[in-house]
Length: 180
Image 1: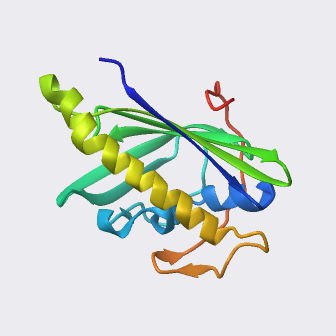
Image 2: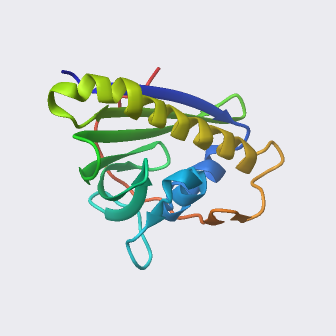
C-alpha cells in the first residue's frame, strides 16, 4: 500500500522574510499544534535549524503517550525544508514545508507523505483514525497561522501555547515536491 499524501496551501499576508523565521524555530511548533496533542519539544538548548538536526518531541495521540524524533533532511532557507520521522507513531512521516512569495504575501505549502501503522488493518486505521486527526491538526495549524500573521504584522510574541521565536536561516539541499 502506498503512503497517504496530504497537500495543503495557506496564503499569509506577510512577506516570506517574516514568515520563514517563525517556521525556522522548531519550538514554535508547539504554538501551532492543538492542545489535545499535549505536544512538547524535548530537545534541550538552542535548536539551530540545519540539515541533519535531530529533534525529540513528546505528545499524546488519542490519549497514548508517544515519543517522536525527526531529522531535518533538507534545509533550503527561505524556500523550504523537510523533516523526516525517525521514531514515532507512523510507519512513514515525511513533511515538506515550502514558502513562496506571492501576491504581496507568502504562500505556505505542505506536502506530507505518511503511512499508518496496523499491518493488514492499516487502510482502515488510516481512514478512520489517522487521516481525520491529521486533517484536524492541519486545520488548527492554518487557523492559528492566520491569527498569528494578520495583514498588519505578527501578533504579540506570546500565545497560549508558549513563546514564539524567530531564527536565522542556513543552507541545505534536495529536490522539492511542493511546486504547484
